[in-house]
Image (cartoon, rainbow, N blue to C red; front, side, top):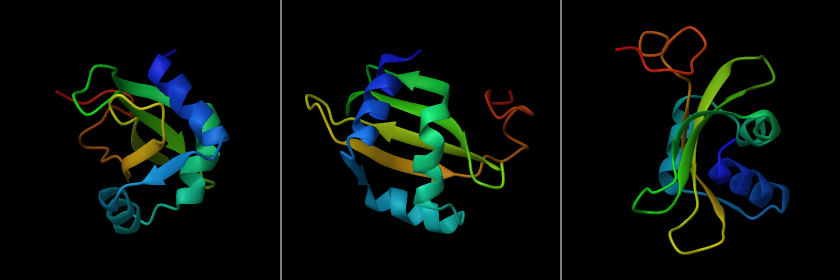
Length: 107
């Protein structure tokens, strides 16, 4: 498992979370509830891991809402900080751009 994901899940359990302005916009644009994102995080599946991202470690994860619809969420931790977990963006993955399980980008 990704160390970044483990750290983010721990921060979420401690309620040390922030949503970026872009994150709020994207949640609204795709009609994704923040509650669904948080509820899905204990079972989040890593899609892409960016432990050395210049703004701080981040991950793209796959979670599911209450209706079992997929949601991609990008979480990050600010560089040089121990928290908070920052929701960078969240969106409904486009089936034309992702494999059927939404875990890999199509070529």
